[in-house]
Length: 84
Image 1 (cartoon, one colour):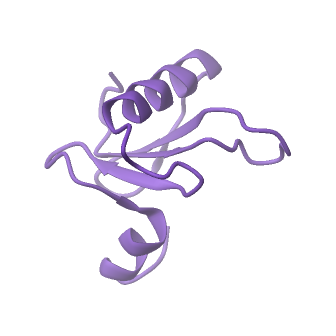
Image 2: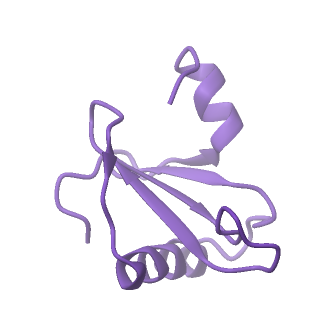
Image 3: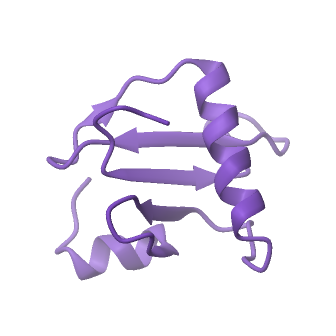
């Protein structure tokens, strides 16, 4: 889906917009941002959200692509010692 990605961050709110808009960011194993075009961001977000319909998507979530673990982005930061 996103070559080189280790983690995908998904939300229904794109930064800088007041209305809901599917959004995703991808990070490599070193937590460096991988550039995605708009089509990739929307497709990845849609795929993750549809795969997890029971999740409350008003929050932002991180999907670990190696383990398939989905957790709130705030919880992901605290468990890894913070940072981006």
